[in-house]
Amino acid sequence: MKKKKLIVGITVPQSIGLLKGQLNYFSAHGYDACLLTQHDERSSNYCKEEGCRKLNVIIERNISIKKDWKTLLALIKIFLQEKPDVVNVGTPKMGLLGMIAAWLCRVPNRIYTCRGFRYEHETGKLKKILMACEWISAACANQIICISPSVKALGVKDGLFDEKKCVVINKGSSNGIDPEQFSPSKVSKHDIDTLKDKYGLKGKFVYGFLGRVVDRKGINELFEAFCSIYDEDQNVRLFVVGPWEMEQVKDKNLMTKMQDHPGVVVTGKTFDVALHFSVMDVFVLPAWWEGFGNVVVQAADMGIAVIGSTGTGVCDAVCDGFNGIHVPIKNVAKLTEAMKLIKTDQVLREKLAANGPIWGHNFKPEIIWEGMDKLYKAR
Image 1: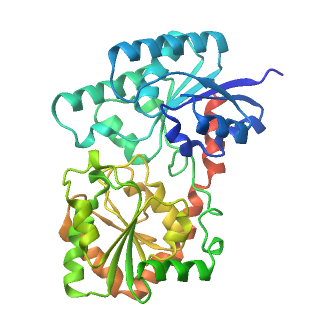
Image 2: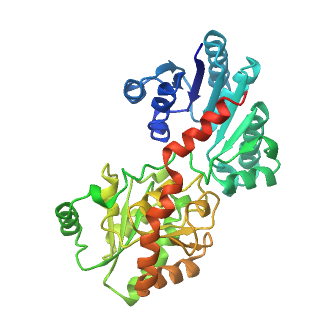
């Protein structure tokens, strides 16, 4: 029997982490699986590891009418040559151009994967443009995978998505979170002690943040809340792990303020995520919006109590009262209150931490991939 041809597209190879294990799974399950993205070493290595084919296209993240037109023509050419049965594209630019090209080429099964809405906290002309792009992507699709229930709800509410097209696989997530990768058993006590010694965290109560340091992740609110807690208790620490993207940080002095604060540790990017989770007593993500808060589930898998916002995509990653606490977005007072509560109430903190791995098992990658497989075979 002829294999179904599947093309999965992303805008830039930096997003390849969103697809780890996915195309290997579909290759092993009888698909002729292809990755469609820009050519670089990362995309080449990914395809070798996953056992899938690579289709190259030049595509820009930012809006450029001339370049985007060339990309659209290139995508049409690829789809006409490859004749895929299924096209699944996500990330804003590939989602838009990939869906238009797939619709024009009459690809039988066109799936748009929505990973959140950039327009949520934008205003004016830019917001209207971003919303229009989402509407077009969705209109060209047969099916829309919303990676969290709140993304689906907002897309339908704002008139961008036809609810009949929308699917949330299980409880959400774009690619699942591997509980084996984020397990306390993966980290040695020696390595934990070494990291604590390096950053002066021994004997301290550690609030942790891990991710890109940008305004929309709620980093300003987190720093403000922490400062008020530190004023009352100098035994607390804020452990900030991740790369700074200063073009998305309004306060250009924020990094200096945090580095100069005696209670804040700023590490920069790390490749050993599990180890850095291991020194945290509480994980905090007061983000304004996400597609889905993968990092919150990773922390939960590590057996850490979490605090997450009620923002789109973040609220779905925390089970309020079971493994963590919800706080409203951009509300420093409520965030401070939750951070104090989870520190002082040890019984609550230990309960939330113990429930984390139980919650995390809802998001195993195989659950997400099996759901995708059903969608791919539906047409």
